[in-house]
Image (cartoon, rainbow, N blue to C red; front, side, top):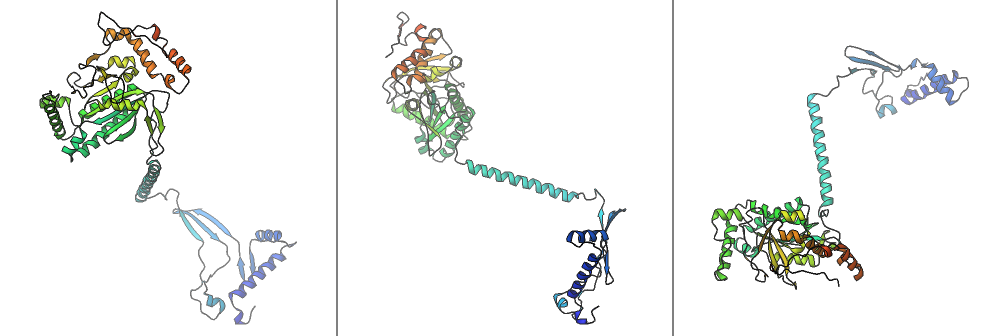
Length: 463
């Protein structure tokens, strides 16, 4: 076909094959267009020219003992040679690799033989577990980063027209303890904080803030506050402080105060060790509780709620007159408790107490803890008491049963949200009249200072 050896190049071969291929398709096609040429190619199947055959494509598979054997063939190009660019441009360049015809036969394994080996399966399982743990860790890290610094305010009292119970705590003689035991106090205060926060979480109360080693806690009702206070005192007594130096320091402080007071009897310093360990252990925390309406604000910096006004001030003043291990409630908190709770509580009526900054004396009740309620006593902290001998009360007495309705009405008036909120005087008067409608028909409590022969009655006067 091409006598000149210089023309024996792959490019000329490609041109000759393409021209012959198209010519045969055109001869076998009646009406020449792209659609009819394609139809002729697939209908004819094989093409032969210049002693070269192209087609027919064959694909057949058969099942053997080793698996499925398939044969693919197009009976086209044979003796395939990979040419260098030098050979393409110059036919005199020798062929680097001899021509070869690749085999179009391959065998696939039987179904089921492609299972993973035990080692491969173990690798897949371990990899999946590690990947899952890594993903969980990333999610937790993301959640932590998003929530860090955000306070949980679910337990915070938020309704300004409903009474809130405020609890203040403080460590007795904390300044003296820091001076005497500087190495022990950091861990002791940290344990004190853990105990109180566990109790706050358990009783669904709200930690407003800490001021030094003091806590300010808000509760939605007086019942939760009383339970919280009892829980804190119990846990502090049962806590393993791992040292007796704190108790020895307290005993020394009491003896010193007794000597300075001119022979006053110390209430726990002279107890035997066994008797002391039943009643006291570690840090002594005093607590004051008061119930009333508060000015509730969301702090923009801490993103937590804070409570302002007379309720917080009264709770702080109440805590200030208590001693370590003592829980004192104001009369407002006492009458805010359900009747069943008041009947079950072991308490002591402390009478009217003078508080700093409060123009009138305030009735106080001491919550006697369940442990050794009759033996733990506290030295008097203030000489401004209206009564020097506290009256013990446990459950209802005939006088409290007779006057329960009157005192309940008085407490209802004291805590009445609509009586003291911002409203016109006629509106507050109507609210007070409705709230205390039963008071006018109830019996009257005997006066605290009245004798059995001269009962004292109280009358309500609206102004």
